[in-house]
Structure formats: C-alpha cells, structure tokens
Amino acid sequence: MTVVDLEKGAPQDAPRSIPRQTAEGKGPRTAAASAVTGLPDVPRRIGGVTRSGVLSVFGAAASGLCVAVLLFGELAPFSGALGFFVTAYLSFLGIYAVLTGLEEDGQAVRDRVMTVVLWSAGGMMFAALTLVVGFTAWRGREALPHANFFTQDMQAAGPLDPLTDGGIAHAMLGTLIMITIALAITVPLGLACAVYLNQIPGRFSRFVRTIVEAMTALPSIVAGLMVYAVWILNLGMQKSGLAAGFAISVMMLPIVIRAADVVLRLVPGTLTEASEALGAPRWRTVWHVVLPTARSGLATAVILGTARGIGETSPVLLTAGFTAALNADPTSGPMISLPLAVFNFVKSPEPTMIARGFGAAAVLMALVLVLFVIARVIGGRGPGHQNKRQARRAARASRRDVTRFAELHTPGLELFETGSSESDGGTEHPESSAQTGASEGSGHTERPERGAGNGAPSPDAPAADNGEQSPEDNAPAAADGGPAPQGPPAPDNETRTGGAGGNSDPATGDAH
Image (cartoon, rainbow, N blue to C red):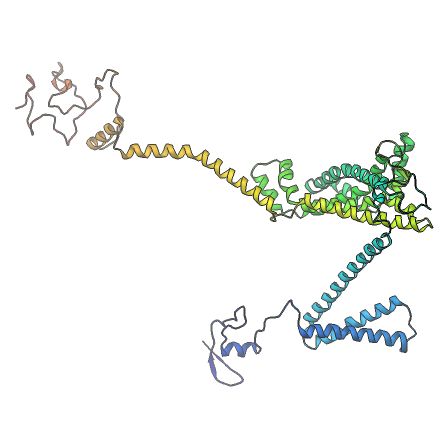
C-alpha cells in the first residue's frame, strides 16, 4: 500500500505501525512518524520543583505586594489590613498565571494556579491552628508550671490568691466523667444506627437519616434544656454529672451517626457479597467483615463526636450546675467541666484567674489530643495495612491453620498409600481372578458365585483342570431320549483332560 505525499509529490510506503517512544523518551522513531506528528513526544513533568517555577512564584508575590502598596498608598483611597492582604493575594494569582502562561499551555496554567491556591489554604489553616494553640499556651505559661494546678481544686482559693493555691483537678475529673458517660451512650447507639442505615434501606431508614441530619444543626442550649426539663423538672432528679453526660450525648450522637454512615458506605460491596455467598448470615457479615474493615474510619467518627461534646459549656451549666469542690460521684451533687471552668476563670478581672483560665484551656486541648491518640491506637490502621504486632498475630494464625490442615489430610493420604502398596505387591482378590478367567474363556464378564462355607465348589463353577470329568459329564442320558443335562461349557483355551486332544471313556473315565 502506498500513499502520496502532497507536499513533495512522491509516493511513500505507509508503515503499518509507528513505534512509540519508550518511557524514558528515547525510543526509536521513523521519518514517517516525525512527519505525521510534526513535534517530538516530550513527557510532561507533573511534580517537582523547577527553577522557572520558583522564580515565577517569588516574582508574582513581589509584584502582587507592589500592586497592593500602589493601590492603598498612592493610586486609590483604600485602607484596611484585610483588604490590603486580599488585594495582594489576588494580584499575586493573576501575575503568576501570566508568568506561567509564557511557558506552559492552558491546562498547565490552571494546574499551577490551583496548586498555589490549595497550598495557600493549607498554610492559612495551619497558621491559624498554630496561633490558637501557641497563644493559649503562652497566656497560661504562668499557671502550668505549678504542680498544685493539677492536683488541687478551687474550694479554698479565691481570685486574689496566688497561683500557688488552687487548681483545676475538680474540672479535669468532671470532664473525664462526663465524656465517659457520653461515650458509653453514644458509641453503641451511634454505630448501631449507622449500621441500620447502611444495611437496611427503606422508608424508615430515610426518615431516621433525615432526623439525624436535622439533629446535627441542633443548638447545644436546646439539648441542655431538653435534658433539664425531662430529667430535673419532670423526674425530680438533681443536677449531676450524669445529667450533663446525657446532654453531651445528645450533641455527640448525630455527629457519630453521620460520620460512621459515610465510612460504612466506603466498605467494598464485594466483601459483603463474598461473605453472604459463603453462607454467613447478615449479622455475622456485619460483625466480622464490615466493622473490622471500617474500624479506622469508625475511630475517626468517634473522635469527631468527642471533640464536639468535650467542648460544650451551656448544657453542662444547665444540667450539672457549678461547684468549686471536687466531686467524684456523677449521680449526686453539682459537677463542673473544663470548658465551664475556663469560662468562669477568664471573666474575672484578676490576672491570676485569667492565667488559670488559659492554663485550663491548654489542659483541655492536651486532653483532646490524648483521647485522639487513644482512639487512633484502638482503631488501628486501614484495611491492608498491618503493624508489627498484627503481622506477627497473622503469621501465628497462618501456622496454626497449616498444622490443622495437615492433620486433617494426613489419614486420607495414608489410606491411599496402603491401597496402592497392596496392588503393587501382586495380591489379587479371588473373585477378581475368577472373573478375569471367565471373561477370557467366554468373552463376557460374569460374576462367579461363592461356594459353600466348607470349601465345596459351587454348582455353577467351571470344570477343574485336574484331568477328571465333572459329575455332569458322567451322568447318563435322559430316559426320553432328550439331551443329557450338561454343566457350563469348558473354556476354549483349556483342555478338559490330561492328554492332548484325547477323549475320555464314559465307563471308566480314563483317557485314551
């Protein structure tokens, strides 16, 4: 097959296939391929830092800052720090897009600009988090070094007392008790509701999901008022840590349910289908397949709910009251939490109380971090990722399974080996030998009959080859001239007498 090059006017052979470049971009190319494409295949560099990219970023940042300075200082009557930074950032993005467009195509320009936007957002969030944590720890630096701050309560200390007196032990214990009660209520109910929404679809599940989504936007003061009206006013109970735990669980429950429902949806359907195909019931599939697969995500859901509940203040104030003494009984007496203690400390005009408030806030953040670490350890890693302890446990289980399978299959193998050794030794069953002889003589297989128990031959057995006739051959003919009864015919390939081809005498039985 030939094609005509319109530009040169000469026929050329059209190659059947054009070899592509290798992964390194150094593969062979033909003249026809170069003529067709016109441009060499250059692999695009996706990641990494280049000199032109770094210069573009810093040049665009300097240009954007200069534009903002000109607009706010010389050209326009603009003012305000927030407007200045927003104008500088938008100018930086525009100039960076122009500089990138001088070397790259439109797709690369959009990719670079979005990369800068995402990095800027991440850096801003990290800076805000660092600012909050650092400012809190810096303002509480005066109270944190004192040991009594963690071991004493405020029952014998006042606003004018120094930092060497009093502490937040009562608030720490109250927070731990309340969050433990809330977790004991929220984790089973939240995970069970999420499993129900995920495994049993229907009208009622859609109704439950709608209620859960509506409860997510429930104000915390409403949850506290509900528990206060039901538990304290209607039932006549007193304010306690138990009532505060109920109010906190109301706030945590929708967060845990929604997050767990999203995580359970990510479990591959092939795992549940394989479990049900093996005959496992639905509850066993959920317990042994779905929940272990989503364990790390469920731990994250519990962490989100805990972070929401541990910082609540108004429900605790309505249901647990306020106290400056240490109370370890959640069923009776008022109890205070760390957020409520921070609120009462920082509203005081005394510097020592303000320092105690910021110290309590730093302890609260540290407590949340410790709970986060514990939840991650319990949750473990994601599916397919094992730590050293889990890998050793899996190896031990595999060795036990190998031993168990070997014990189950060993008797069967010995039985097969015994049967094969008997056949190799030449031992043959009498019935099989008789059946083989009959098939060779008569041309068909006939099952021989067993004789009497004393070793007598069967009536239907063939004649013996010892030179004697069978009783049927020596019997006289029938009186009516009919044929005399005869036994089964002797085999064709065996002689009935000792001589070769001789006949036997009917009277004496001797061969002659």
